[in-house]
Length: 219
Image (tube, rainbow, N blue to C red; front, top):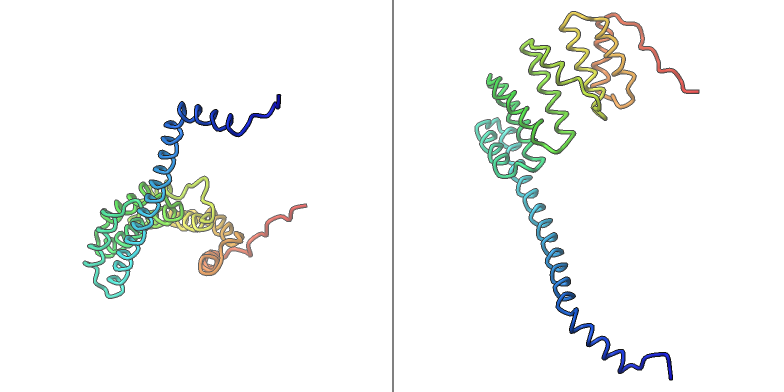
């Protein structure tokens, strides 16, 4: 007798297996298809939200360019209300904080920046909001509050920017030697280019500091 099953036997076995398991297989296929469709629709929905938020944020910027601050504030509030989970909400918050500060609404501006810090999932925008809020506290001579914001353990690409503000805070506290060390850290930071590097060097020149010590070469 041939050890191999005939085609008819294989068909019969499959029919028996399908009778027992066919419904579960179809259910699994249906669930997988539904999940795939749901994921695709969710991605499309999120992309649609981002695009709509981008269009509205562009209106914020256009209003600013026209010096129409009332419209900029209104449109910015709409971005935050309707698209709070997007980076455009954080960007709108930064714009609105600036306009509020310029209008003399200091508390509102600080609260706005805190909202950005606490709600955005974008680390870069969070750093920008921290640095700006620190500057606002410095403007009111509330240096302890500013220090809390700039003492970051992991600032990444913003390390030089934090060091620069630390230097300015130390100058405002009457600690020129410590400020000098902070500005040295900026000019020796390879990521600090352009205006940030130039301003740090200018601070050192104003302090009468010698040329910055060069980092020790690795052996």
